[in-house]
Structure formats: C-alpha cells, structure tokens
Amino acid sequence: SNFEPGDPFILTWTAVAETESLDVDAYVLLDVAALYFFYPSWGPDLDYQNTTLEAGVPQALTLFDFTWPDVPPSGINIRFWTCTMSAGTFNLCSNVDTAEAMI
Image 1: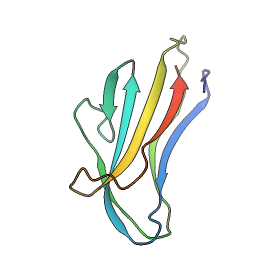
Image 2: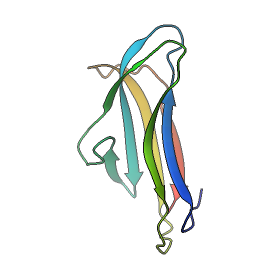
Image 3: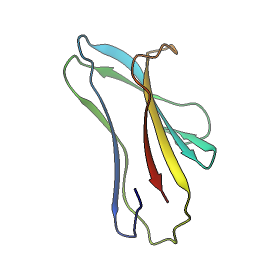
C-alpha cells in the first residue's frame, strides 16, 4: 500500500484460539530498512504483549491509528511481522504473518 497525506493509517492485529483458551505473548515487529522496532514499546529491544485468547472469540489489538502526515514519500518499504508464542516461552503457537506498506 502507498499512503498519501490525510489517509487513515490503522493497523490492527487480530487472533483467535480455535479450540481452547490460550495465554500467549503477541509479538509484532516493525522492519524499516533493517531497523527493527517491537510493539508495544516500539523500541529496538525485544518486547511483546501478553494476552489471553478465548476459544472462538477474536481478540484485537490496535497497533497504530493515526492520520498519515504531509511528508514527502521516501520510497522505503516497511514490513510488520507478527506471531504468538505460548506465554513465557518461545514456542510458536500461530502462523507468522506479515503486512507491507511503502512510505
């Protein structure tokens, strides 16, 4: 996607546990030209959001919600990477997913 000044930029992460409730750590990584930032602090150090996914109930986290500023385009591709791990571990319990945009 390409964004123009005044465009809404809303990024929401949504997950659901299919069969049973799960306590998970949600990881969201923002990759900007090989500079990495972790949700929810958006700093360079590994960070995550712990949440409980109830069976059959979608859980949503709004990661960004702002109006795109009036800045000249840079032509840089950004990518968000997401996954969930079993709480307190690095055991992957979801698919790894991505979303891309050009800024």
